[in-house]
Image 1 (tube, one colour):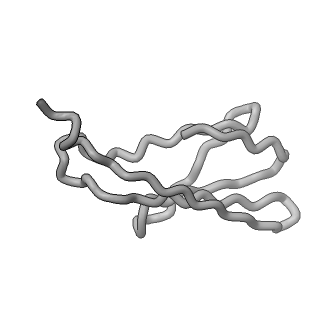
Image 2: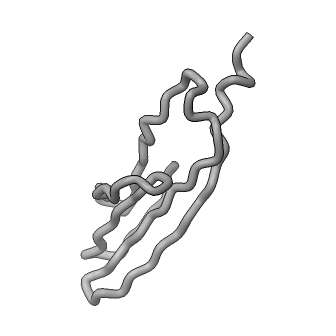
Image 3: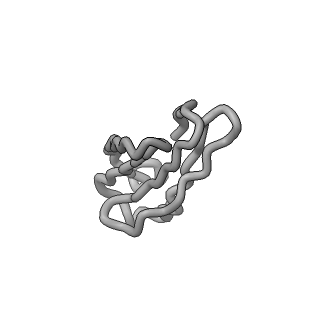
Length: 77
């Protein structure tokens, strides 16, 4: 998952499902990537939601959610 946020002074966090909020490190261009750490053994095959929140130096905040379905069992032979 990759997206750009170019506003100087922006702080961002991300959360998977109802897990703990984690700091999101932005690169010099405001880009980021997330590694969920979900297992690939089929034990977490279900729908998941990633929430990303950001706030700027002025205190304005915004959040976005994206859902996806993990389905490793379908890829097994």
